[in-house]
Length: 303
Image (tube, rainbow, N blue to C red; front, side, top):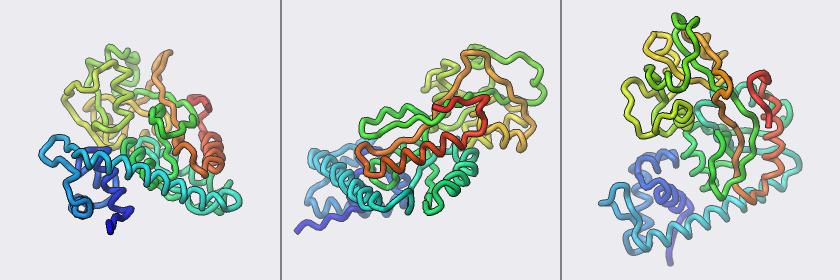
């Protein structure tokens, strides 16, 4: 009798999606050796290799490809069953697993959690902060119920619900406060500090400046906006910030903020969740609360 666990299927599904052992382990919140052990045990149950380990990125064997398709269907159905059981409760209550991207979490979470607590006192929200690609993978695996991300994500299995538009602004040293706001063309010639690869906010900044995503740029690439702001305050360059980050980051470093002229760059924030989830009604109610907890109506447009 074949003995395959849901854990093995989740790990294999993540590996099949990301084609990288370390990234798959990070997406599953386990160590790489722990993930490798489960994959090897799954291969032992299958009686044949599922992974082409000598390829970069790794590949799937023909059997591995079939197993990946089955694993995706099983995990989708399991997530749907869990959603159905949880949705049977009356009202928005219980545990909600919500993913949030790093360029939103430090700035919106305090207002968001307070608003949700006031509106749904019986709701227990578990927050997972990580990059968009990992959030989407965990949504697909049923490890998250929804995620707060920049739209669009263009995943066929997900529903996208816009919340509000947010302006992007220029952060630069105090010494440049009275200089004209540079155009996108001029920004390309400045020491533009960016988040590291994998952050959607990096892609938005590059797109505004019309810089190809594969362009090598000298200078700092950080994992957090706060690091970029500290470097701007030290006079090492300029960076783009979402409007929601300004109040926090201006207290942390000596920077000046400049608004871009129309058409100014912006991002659309929204929630995504699995199509057909039984939690859709609850998630729509949560989305309504998040729209209302946006306090800066002068620079953002609720959708």
